[in-house]
Image (cartoon, rainbow, N blue to C red):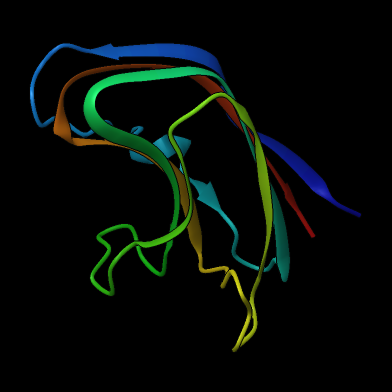
Length: 122
């Protein structure tokens, strides 16, 4: 049996300040404990930036990211993106305990994005 989780419903975000990232609150992160696989999809209706910005799907061992957040996927244009992350050594996309999205706007003076993300855990 699989659990489908709406990690982020269709939402539009706008940032008009230079060098700003956007990270969802911790209660919106997906806890994958006990799952061996996650099918993660990202639907981007639009993504524009003045400079270089991107939307990332990330995974980490703990909320503080003491071991670092690992990027599974990045997107900076309209499209449907997906990946299968697995909780085993040597996986192309290693699944850790937490999943989240993040907009990296460090090299953009402004950006705007409309997207959603779903996760199916097995």
